[in-house]
Image 1 (cartoon, helix red, strand yellow):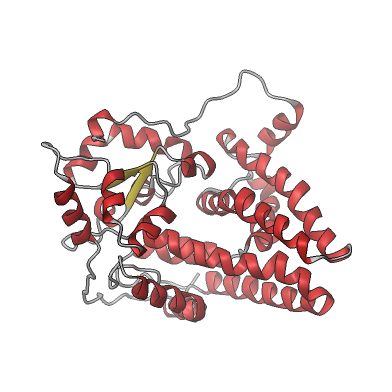
Image 2 (image 1 turned 45 degrees about the horizontal axis):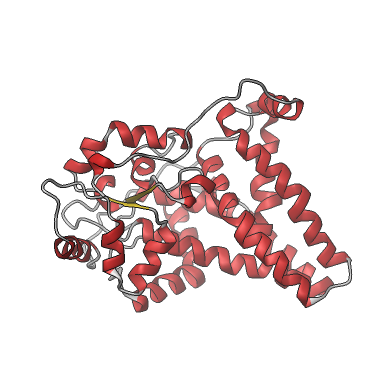
Length: 355
């Protein structure tokens, strides 16, 4: 498919002609009416996920109940929760006079979906967006062969076992005491809470908190790898060529246009409903910069195809931006070039003022 022929089907904002009493209540609490789907999710997760988890702890536990619970967690809720957490980290959901409600997502719902409180915010807002996948980014993909499963395993294991230590050192070096304190408080609270629940009911704790925690950290790093798998070695700091965008996929419908990752790095605070609009307006810039755009697949599938070295499948999903269009062989060569390791010397970073 060529960019000139691409018609977007991803969600944009369409206000309703009228709202029911519950929606009107939420609209009075929200900073932005376009985030009403987030409020719907909060109600849904509170009424379904939390009671199901409580039953596993307080009812008669059976292992056969673990499967439907985990299917609900992973297949129905987790993708939407992670991207609601992402969006509300960039843009607070509730108005200032109701600001305490903003803690409900990371502190109450977060642990049920594998997110320890505050760590995502500190990593994503306090580090990743500042460093933009360059050398100082603790989750950078640059030095890795991004079509190698061995390289991926090294990347994931480093993040899983050393990520918190490295992030703590990063924040301490930059004298970002407030963020460091938030992360340590959230992380330790989560571990103490889980340890106490293990003493009460280790089987339910394993299903409700530990397995989602392990899966969430895996899937987020696979997603980040896919988002930053194809990098122009000449311009690694340019969002047009160090990130990718995926369009017209189920993922965008469920996860609030998260596939527009180039647009997100260009302007981190852009509202999720505006992502397709920005892409449409700036098609010429995407084409001029040689941006990589896929249609019909998500970041996890990009990661999966790279692990299998299925460049033919990736090429078949590429939105062509060049005229005349390239052959499949040329596209595959182009994609392979963009996954080579990039080794650069990181510039010195001065400490930031204390917060």
